Length: 197
View (cartoon, rainbow, N blue to C red):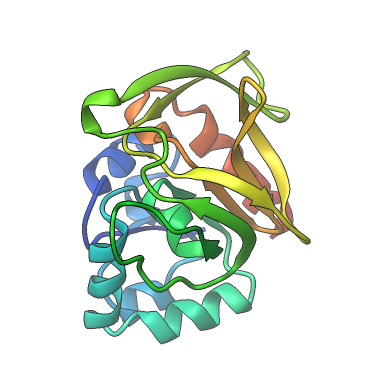
């Protein structure tokens, strides 16, 4: 199984490091264009700046190929900005013009709703069926999931707040597991991909 990390902007090195010990080096792909995407069996969409990532996806000629792969059931784990790009709807926010999205997951999100950079925090996240207890969720300018619609189900919670969702083979997280030093979520996601295959 070839595992890709969208490598245009954001937490690319952090996801790459998180996959060490989970995926052999020869099976990891830095996805920078359509040819890389075509070789990928599962994809990580990193955190970063969602408007910038959306523009770079378009500039790289990846928007249409990625939309087709998503429609065809490509397994994806999206974190923070990646979650925004997969949402069906973005609620108005004070952060300005919102990016286009793929609309893959029927959720409504609001960008940067957990606060500015200086208000970043780590919280104890409960993840459905994750062995080993709570997960150390890192929240940096994270989007808030306001609504979970048809075809999506909650996957992770910070207290009573939904901070992760699942829609078929797609997982979306408001937090940054790649910054936690804990590979359990990367490992669990890829285990579900392996079972589907």
